[in-house]
Amino acid sequence: MEHFDQLYQALNEVVGYIYPNEIELRWSILIVLYPYITGLVAGAFILASLNRVFEIKALKPTYEISLLAALAFLLVATMPLIFHLGHPERFYELMMTPHSSSAMAIFGFVYLWYLMVVLLLEIWFDYRRDFVVWSQESKGLKKFLYKVLTLGSNDISPKALKLDDKLGYIITVVGIPSAFLLHGYVGFIFGSVKANPWWSSVMMPVIFLLSAMVSGIALILVTYMVINYFRKQKIDMLCLDSIGKYLFYTIIIDFTLESLDQIHRIYEAEESFDIISLLISGKLFFTMSIMQVLAGTLIPLFILGFFQFYKPKEKIRKTAYLISGILVLVGIFFMRWNVVIGGQLFSKSFYGFTSYKIGLIGGEGMLAAGVWMVVPILILVFLLWLLPPWKKQHSGG
Amino acid sequence: MPKHILRLIILFVIVIGLFLVARQFLIPESFGEYGHYRANSIEENANHDIKYVDRAECAECHDDIAALKQGGPHKNINCQTCHGPGNLHIEDPTPENIVKETEREFCGRCHNKNAARAKLIKQIDINEHNIESKCIECHNPHEPWN
Image 1 (tube, rainbow over the protein chains, first blue to last red):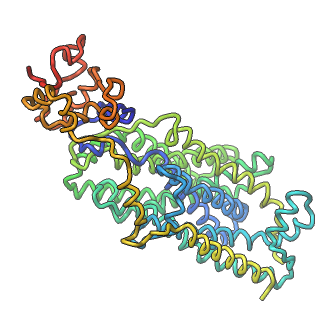
Image 2 (cartoon, chains in turn purple, green; image 1 turned 60 degrees about the vertical axis):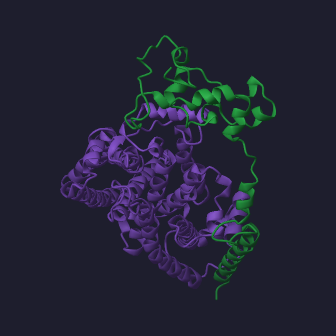
Image 3 (cartoon, each protein chain N blue to C red; image 1 turned 90 degrees about the vertical axis):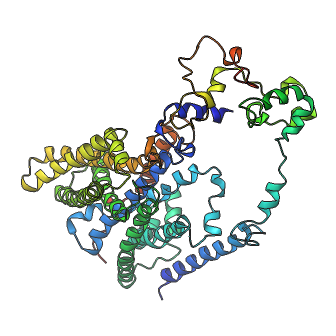
C-alpha cells in the first residue's frame, strides 16, 4: 500500500497526458553518477596518454596523478549501477552468463579489460622500479604491500626498465581506443534508445566522449592544485597553463558538437520537437541553461579563452583555473543529469510531463549519491599515500 | 623472458583461471535448458502461494453485495481491487484480515481529476469536491450512483 501512496503523490505532479508507466522515473540520480564517474575516468586517462604518447612534456607533473585518479574513479564507476539494482548481490550474473545482444553485458567486459589490461598494467609498469626501491626502503605495512606489488622480482636493470617502458607505451597506445570505447559505449547506451527522441542520436557516443574528456581534464586540473596546496608545493604554472589550454580546446569541440546536435534537432523539428522545447524552457531550464551551458561551459570558456590571449598574474590565473575547473565539473554533472533525468521527464505520448523529486535518504537518495562521489576521493588519497608520484625517480634508467 | 613479465603472465593466467572456475560454480544448474535464463525459475514462480481468490468465492458469503455491485458501474471491478488479497479472509472470515479503506484519498486514486485518465472514469477534484465529508457518506462504493 505504501508504494501506491507514493504513486498517488507522484500522480499529483503529472502535467498533461502521460502513460501510466511513465509516472515514476526508473533511472534515478545513481544513473546520473554512472556516466559522470566513467567520464572522469576516460578523461583523466586521455590526459595521461597525451603526456605519454604525444610527449607533451608540460603535462609531466600530472601524469601519475591522472593515472591514479582514473583508477580511483574506475574502481567506483560500477557501484552506482550495482546499488541501483533491486538485487545488488546478483550483479556478477551479468558476467557469468553474458548475452551478446546485451550492451550492458559487453560493458562488463569492456570495463574489465580497461581496468585489468589498461590501467592496472600501465600503472604497474610505470611504478615497478619504485616498487622495488620502496620495498627495500620502507617498513611495516608499506614494505609488505610494495613487496607484493613487485611480484617477487627485484630486477631493475636498465634492460628490464627499458622493456617496462616499451610495454607501458604499447599499453597506453592500446589504452586510448579502450578509453574511447569505454565512454563511447556509455553514450551508446543512451543514444541507441530509439523510442526516446531526447536520447536517440548517433552523436551521443561522441558527445559523451568529448564531455568525458572535458570533465577528466578539469578533474586533474583541480586535483593537481589541491594536492600542491596540501603538500605546500609551488604549482608548475607551465603545466597548469597547458592543462588550461587543453581544457579550453576540448570545451570548444564539446560545446560545438552539443550545439550541432541541438541545432540539428531544432532544424529537423520532428514531431517530438514541441515537447522537447517545452522541456528545455521549462523543467530543464535551471539545470541546462543556467548550470550546464552558462556556468559549466560559457563562463569557463570565456575565462580560459581570455588566458590564451592575455596572461594575468599567477595568483589571478590560479584562482581562475580553480574556479573554471570546478565550474566545468559541476557543468558536466548537470549535462549527465539533463540527459538521464531529462529524457525521462516527458511522456512518449509527447503530451505531458512527470516530475522527479530526489530524496535525501534511501538507497537512491542524495546522501547515497554523495557517498559514491566521496569514496573515489578517499581511494585516491589512499593511492597517493601508497604510490606518491612526487617520490618517484623520474630520470630514466 | 624477464622474471617479472613471466610472473605477470602467470598472475593473469591465475586470475582468468579463477574466473573460469568460479563461473562453473556460479552459473545456476538449470541455466540454458530452455533459453538464456534459469529454467528452474519457471517452477519456482509457479510454486508461489496464490493470494488472490476467485470473485465467486467472495460472493459465496457476500451474495447481497455481489448482487448490488452487479447493477452498478463498478460491476467489472474485482472485489480485491479495493479490499486487497482475500486468501486469509477466506480461511478465517474476520474483519481484521481484509482491507476496508474509507478515506477520501483512497477513492481519489481512481477518481481524482487527472488529464491522463480515461474520461470513462468519473473524476472530481478531491481538494474541492465536498471536502468536509467522506466519499462513502454520499456514495455507496458497491453501487456508486444510488
